[in-house]
Image (cartoon, rainbow, N blue to C red; front, side, top):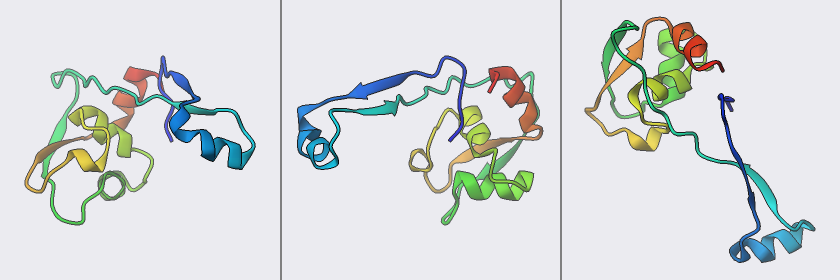
Length: 108
């Protein structure tokens, strides 16, 4: 899972999970807060357009366009949609031509 600048963690000690915590012998769970993607100015990066279709995932698109699974989050970041569930069939999405520009921009 990627790490971002100013990433925040949370302590979950909700009563809703009390039985689960007791079963595992813990009092709380430490978890990452959802990172909010804010996007970039498209004037600074070159992108290709792609239409989301059945069977697509951010990992698959990263592998298709970059030859590695590592940059799935770059596609999510540019499109301001952090997970596969945020995309619908037929959505036009932007694929940055150089993912390292985004990596360097957010200081990951």
